[in-house]
Amino acid sequence: MESRIIKSLVVLGVPGVALGVFYLLFKQFGFQFSTIGPTASAFIAILFILIIGGITFFALHRWTPPKTHSELDDTSKDSKKVTTLINNHEKLSLIIHELSATNRMLLMEIASSPDGQYVGDLVTSEKLNLSRGEIVYRGKDLESKGLIYERNLTDKCFRIDNSVLELVDRNLSSLKLLIQNIGKSNDR
Image 1 (cartoon, rainbow, N blue to C red):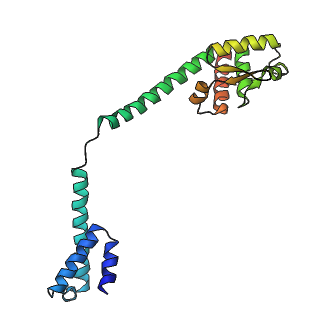
Image 2 (cartoon, rainbow, N blue to C red; image 1 turned 60 degrees about the horizontal axis):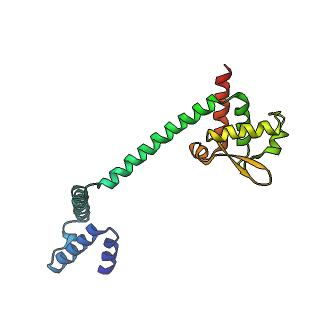
Image 3 (cartoon, helix red, strand yellow; image 1 turned 90 degrees about the vertical axis):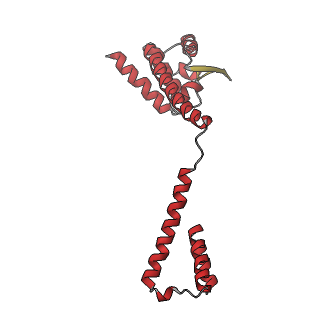
C-alpha cells in the first residue's frame, strides 16, 4: 500500500517526493492523517505542494544566469537582418520601378517559370513580340541590374536571381504581383 502511495507521489515531482518522505516519517512516529480528517489532510497536502512549488519557482527565477552578450547579439542580428531585408526590398521595388515597360514584361515572363525561360521560348511569346537579339540585349540589361542571371544550357536561359528570390521568400507569385503593381503605378 505504501509503495503505491509513494509511486503516485513521485509523479508529482520533488514536492510529491518530499510529501511522501514526510508521510513516512509521520507514520513511523505514530502521527496519523486520519485523526485530522480527510478534508484537512487533503488541504495540508495541497498547501504543502503549493508552498514547495512556489519556492522552487521563485528560486528558478531569482537565480537564473544573466544573458550573455552573444545571446543579446543574436537578437540584434535578427533585427539587423529584418532591416536589411526591408531596405533590400525597397531597393528591388525601386529597380523594378525604373525599368521600361518592355523590360518589366520580360521580367514577368521570366518569373512565370521557376526553372526560368529559354530565349527561344521568349521569342515565340505573344506578350513580348521581340526579336531574339532584343531579348538577349534586354536580358543582359536585367542581369546587370541583378534581377536575373543567364545560364547557357541548350539555349540561353534566363532565371530570376537568387537574391531576388530570397527577398520574396522564393515565391514567384509575390514577385509577379510586385512587378504588376509597380507597372500599374507607372502607367498612371
